[in-house]
Image (cartoon, rainbow, N blue to C red; front, side):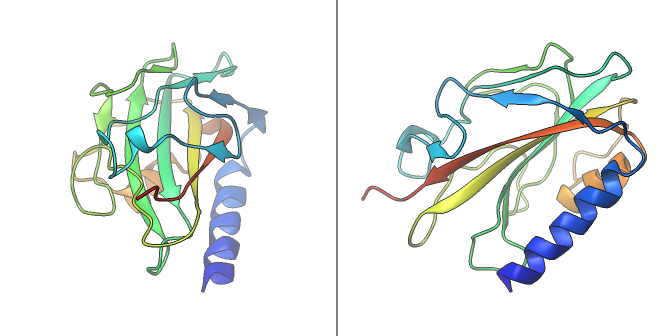
Length: 169
């Protein structure tokens, strides 16, 4: 099932970027490094606030940024979406506990960020950022699939930061 999800995700990303210039965004965090462990503070075992992020190196044609945080290792079809956000300011700053931009529905059908809470083992959390050539006019009930559909043909850059989390308790 994970292999099918990986293939479908790869095809979606390739299709979404087929008409972009392939510009690579930089996605960083002061809370963890790429492929490094995420602190429990940002999980269901902590205060469950989002980790601070910074998106940079967007092309001049970009008008807004979008972000999807996804756990492909979650034991459910398609994995678990932890955060869906669009119309992020072009300065790319997303501080801890961020409430700005437009935030859509996560995998629990709630608005905003939900912390990592893997039932077992170490999971990968993909923080996927997109630079768009438009600002999006979407309903607050937009989920990951709806955001991906709205971004089609408008992605002018993308980047990713992956963090790992395993329950401490």
